[in-house]
Image (cartoon, rainbow, N blue to C red; front, side, top):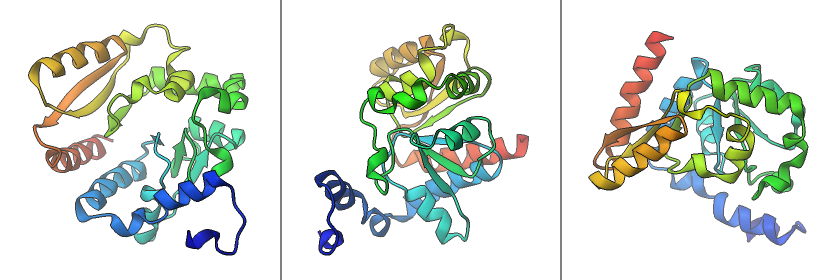
Length: 214
């Protein structure tokens, strides 16, 4: 790749940059509008956590003249501050971010420092028990091994939680089964429409309502 013409890098770094480095130029208007809604939520106090390796949200914010910090699990101090809501304009990448290959985590064993940090884990647990999470465009993120390690394993009474996941309605029977499965984990599945394109309008409306209510 062009990036490695003058720099010696690992195979993983090459692969990550090959896949993610050009995403910004491919971002279309609907994607930008979704990012604008997420950015608006952040500016009104929402914390953002992602399982993605890319930094499209941070890049989009920069285009708007706003700075968002990218965090991964290698910096325990900043992760703790994020969980304590002291770094609200930071995006926590629980699998790492491609611009820092050394922080890429594909399995919970790769983040043992954070998982063994009782203070950090306690803050994560309190977040999940006391705040409402909105799962956006992440399908079965609740089944993600890293997400489970950080949030679910220490939380016992999941069915009493109040979290929400926006999903396409899809097949009626499949939706009902998925809905029941998520309810057991404390997540209410909310259909935003029948088509992927319906998400944009739904999220914009939801964002306005959330920000008005504070």
